[in-house]
Image (cartoon, rainbow, N blue to C red):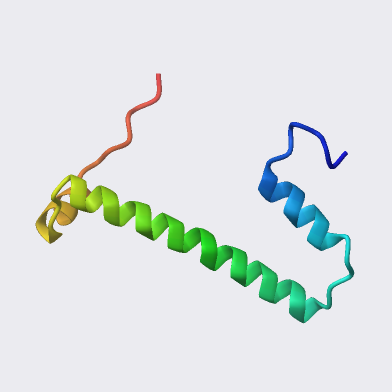
Length: 73
């Protein structure tokens, strides 16, 4: 199962970690660490997009005021 091509390298590492019995405290710490890791990556990508599009606060306010959903057919 660990060599399954349908699992990502992240999933494989997490499976290895879960092979060990963790305390509830350690498990919560691990979840927080993963959440922090992915949120930092998302913030970094958002910053790159912000800079590439040369956005400012007024642009964001305009976007937030727009209705962006399309009516379903």
